[in-house]
Image (cartoon, rainbow, N blue to C red; front, side, top):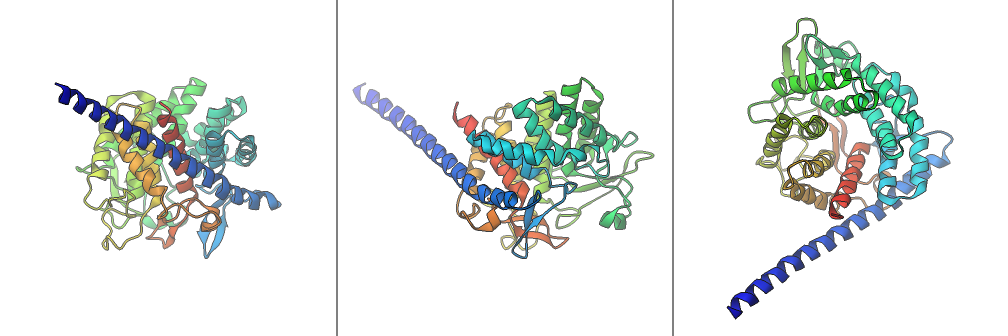
Length: 399
């Protein structure tokens, strides 16, 4: 009996000791990452503030920072990053920059030419309203949702992503292209319904999510990048890719958008079918034989030269943020996966040294290999979702 008591006492001590060690390491990692972000992003802000205009950084091209206009699909991420920095530090200077840079995007609320208004306004004004509850931000979110709703095609039941007659998309002979990325824009519609009391926004979001469930996914729960619909008669015309390796491959960031998008749907509706569905997406991603041990995926799960293919840290960051939220929505076991991703992204293989990487946080992301664009570079949305995941992780570690 005495030996049994000693054994149990030792086991408990080991268990709690290990937990304390893990908690201590987690806190150290979080503190380290926040301190690095303060320095690195602070350098980025200094460049902007010393200029005579608002420079909105997106990526690096030929060793130079690429700045973008307000209507670029990624323009909301840097203002959103300021809000995340305020979340993480509580320092008023970040709030000041967040307000300043967010207001530069005010005119985007009227943009109807593509679906990315959800990304732009959601990441900037969405975070602004979440933190401040300022009614001015609320009005922008509702107006932006009205603009996004003009892209809803009732016959097909989906929100059209790209105009079929603009830019490189016009060469594809599409009629109503819908990309998996569009799942991320549904959060704007859900939020607008909550803020306005107008249920039509939520109905559009649910219709789009349900049609995407039916038409965008294969039997193994990997997803296509692009599904082209007939917007007059309804139904699917074709399924293909624009940014993945092939039409039948699983583009990594597309799988990440799907994971995050259906997490949003479950959070906003509490409809269990979305939680079940997102669990199947999770199983596809994290049981995939081509997922590396560090859980930072190659740019496409079916890329032909794995393991000699570029990684996509942006996809990993999106996944981590989604998984932390899922861990609070009935899937607590997913936190371990998110922690492993963040441990990798926080390490020297992906997190830049202060003063390098053109003052972006994460290295080794991929925009579009088929377009020969943004290959193995930093991206503003990789940083945005990394900081979002970091804030979620810190909040979870407090409990």
